[in-house]
Length: 422
Image 1 (cartoon, helix red, strand yellow):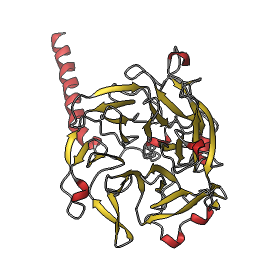
Image 2 (tube, rainbow, N blue to C red):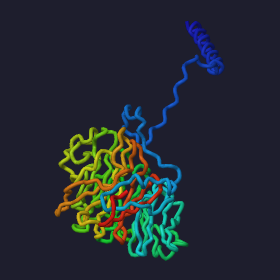
Image 3 (spheres, helix red, strand yellow):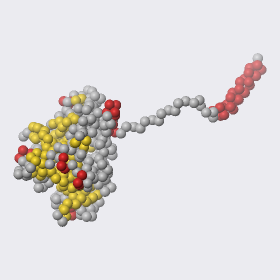
Image 4 (cartoon, one colour):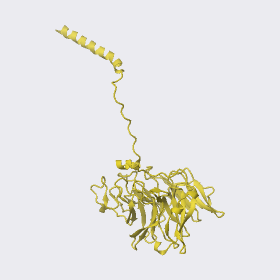
């Protein structure tokens, strides 16, 4: 019996050895033919997050400006209109991707860019206006501010300053970084700068997405001292801001905000907000849009009444960017202490809206009395001939408007005996 079992074990062991001996050769045989698996699709761009199939079919996507600035004789000035008495003229051409505008103490006009790496200086020399490239090699230098001879530049993830810049336009010194504790996210990463009545620098840190739950470092307005110290969070619950200014009457901060995309063609509307409780205001993102629409994903368990309401709605996807209070006396009295707002214009709507300058006229308590058109003509046959990005008021009371699509700056002035603006 024992011999019989031993013989069977020997035969079994031999079979196992033979099988393993043959395995490498068998393993090298090609596998049976099968269909080729499709390559994984590329991740959609961040702006397409949440985009429905119908929008894909409509070819809705951000609108790229021409690769070079438009020649002066090709600019759409003759298509632009303003109320009676206002004159629209070219201030400067060849300012590639012109965005934020600031005026220096000595009349230099500084212009930032978002898609390019440049900050420009527009100067008068021998009776002619010249555009100088002040800095190159910067990264999304959209935000500019100017105070007491110092130019501040906000790039994607740092803020720098240059003292006595107007005395060194021909040989500008290297910017000195004063603050860099910032995220490096590309979506909504570009900054806007303004200086408050408290002489602090105010700027936003946008949400790094179309719609998401932002980190504790995103979706907020911060302020710092002029040397970069003393950082504070002023407001939360914001998606993206590219325009802020302080009321000359109440000294409160107002700002435009771009609401989320792809919820609907007609909702939510973009907003004009007022920060009446610095450090406490929360404007609702991502829980609530336009002050009264809960987000379909993040709004669960929240009421829009928990958050600070907008003071005005500015239209669905109109992309309000630059805004300034008018405190001068060169325009008619009805515009004094009103807010001029540059609406860049929609790109995720089949029928484009915006692409204009509107005026928000306020009541004595700082609430909005009306939103009225001021300058139109940037949309023709449902296509952009220009896109207003920012505006600023010069010391002479006139208004400059940047057009980042054409790389140009326009000037708007008023004369009581003038004709209807072009």
